[in-house]
Amino acid sequence: MERFAFAALLARQKYIARWGLMRSSRTETLAEHTADTAQLAFLLGALAKAQYGADVDPAKISAAALYHDAGEILTGDLPTPVKYKNHTLQTAYKALEKTAEESLLALLPDAVLDEMAPAVTGSNLNERERKILKAADKLSALLKCVEEHQSGNQEFERARAAQLQALEAFALPEVTFFLETMLPCYYETLDELTAGVF
Image 1 (cartoon, rainbow, N blue to C red):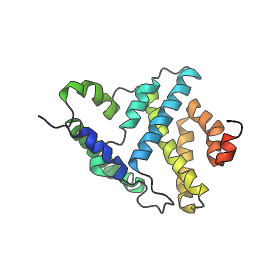
Image 2 (image 1 turned 135 degrees about the vertical axis):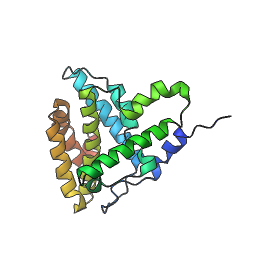
Image 3 (image 1 turned 45 degrees about the horizontal axis):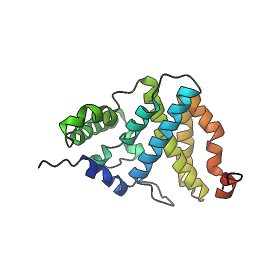
């Protein structure tokens, strides 16, 4: 019987550490980042649709978020300063990511390719959905920076400012809403977060 290694390879996201050049108080894995990004993408998509009338599908954005870094299973996580050092490196890395995605898709049964390929490549997203996915990715990075800040680690301060600036530049109302009403909660203690919940 033929073997299909796609899911088994994706399961290895938990072994890929992010923020390789940064001194972290706690290692963040690619699996964690992917889960966070998918949750945030669904929430931002739901806000965009319900609160701001955007023509978006939160489930489709969330599915694309689940696979947005799948290629890193084969390439590893290249640090952002290296990835975006210059146009030549950025172009080469984008080509490498595309090749990695195609290689992963080749590890799936043909019967599911039509369903899976758009999620893995993000090719079925409209412009607003693509922006929401990118914003969710940046938001996940910002929240890692906040976590490090809360643990007393100053290593992530410049990254935190850069992520916040990038998020504000999206000029998406759902992102602004999150930054104004939800981000402050990440600075609260568990007791503060759950006050009045139970």
